[in-house]
Length: 140
Image (tube, rainbow, N blue to C red; front, side, top):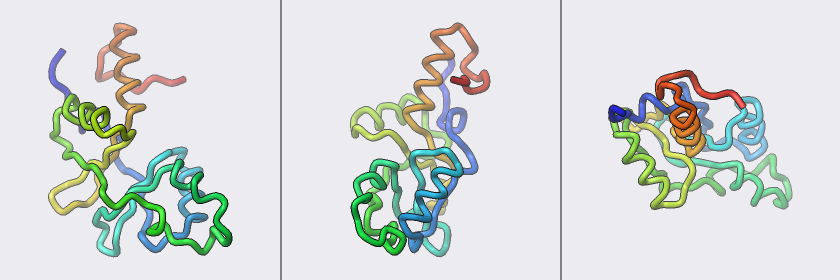
């Protein structure tokens, strides 16, 4: 099997939210896009955090959730990779850091995609099924 780059696995056109979005806004965006991780960007579109569905669940009991900014619950030490990063290296980061998503950024720290544990599970499914690794994502 030839080495794969993150760009071959990632979801491009990633949904992002501004750093002043409320938790209610983030929850809505995640539901609409059917995603579990959303990069948070500053006013210039640069990555400044990430929020997961788990972050939102932990904040569920907060009063006035609609007024709580995402900046209060997001992770600011975001693990990132570049599109040309070998997929094996990205998977190694996911496993070593026990996280389930890496934001894919360009030189200006603008998010260009996201690669998740689910992307690697899909790759494993395709490989175990004898499908080419560049086949379309598996449908459950």
